[in-house]
Image (cartoon, rainbow, N blue to C red; front, side, top):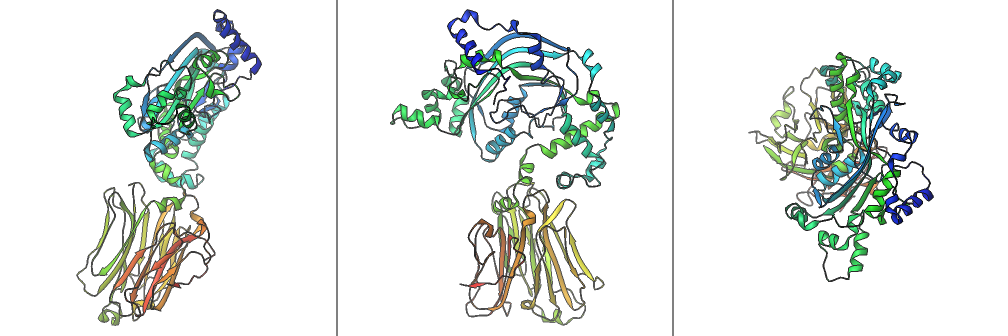
Length: 630
């Protein structure tokens, strides 16, 4: 969306009318007054600029460049202006296929001093995030074209401007703490997103983050003012390759419209529509497509009729409405003492990692139930050893293998090994795709569940504990700082009882720990769960529901709600297991994500079975649920 200088529409039309009728009388920029110039230039020059949240390319959803921050230098009578009207129009279409293409285009619009290569400029802005989703996640491709008109170049007289530097900026700079990488290690990104006021962040990185949010990361020292347009159209991968190879076939130099995709012959060829339809119907269909966009910065929109603008009309309107389109930036560390410069670099990288859009940050900002629905649940069971593997294209994030020793000899030992135990399935790296438990004991029966994900950065923290020592009077598992339990359970089985007598309770979702109090020597205990970052939305609105029943002789089903009518009753994760009273074989299966019902099928009908089912549901006060017979 282009900037406005509050010039009356009537006046603008008069200027354009004169321009069209008498080209020789076109508006002369040299007749502009110094006061008018200073009002425009002072709106931007001398202010801070946020290199992460800023976005210098046109975008109709942005009223102002979101990177502009508070005044750092007073620009009164300190601006030098050179006026030189010139325009550049793309002659051929170009293609963007990745987020790096977008960043490269944006970087062409700024001149910046040395910047850490780990910093991704503009990556915290809304348009960048939108392109990231389209290009990196949805794998879309776009044909683009740009037009640029420069009206004037304005710069600060630094010798004069620094005499009137914002005193609050100087005071805030002096208050900034000196950082070291060791301090920032304790204030992790996850911890800061959840609680920036915690003891590890409050007096170290937080003041720097607040400083950047107030003053930006750089100073806007000078700029070319004018206008810029940005055309984009979604295309197929095949068409993307064709445009890159045969660019000459897609000449746009003679298209009269500012929105080049108003040219039917060009667009019809790009989107590859069939030629057996009437041209006017095709044109109407194409113009109504949402993927055709024209974004403008600078120039006039003429009461929302920007889609009808010709290039020449828009070009002439730059004289009366120009904005910064090429920015010259200098680091704010230039105004800091030597001991603060290194801290600035540390803080800027942290700021980038905290808010810059990448796959990890995009993932952390999602609703946790959406994240769960994109993974794969794998279950398995057997006698003795057990291996669980993720499908092709997925890696292991978390899980467990439960095993039980059916030996009568072990059952009668007073201080023997525990009969129930868990092997945790930790994520061990980006190529870790399986979880395995190995034993030579023929008396072992086992079942397991693992959760698999597509991206290596989705690492849920696996926590567990078993009753190892008779001296322990309680058991506790706890998430690391900044994480919370998303799924977990605790188990108890008396040493002399069989598995169908096992007692199971779910852990509370949203808590940092799960505990068993007052353990006894005559029983074995287990705790297991996995933790997710607290930054995930809606995690506190979930609960783990456990449904169980003994002596079941037919298939059963479990639900999150007795009356399931909408998405709030969905099962987000879950699995079920069953075994007969002789414990000859365990059967297990996963519950489909976002389903309303989970079915547990037993091995043999008419035999008595124990069935257990874990469901991750919306919180309902932990009401007790029962199975329904199939």
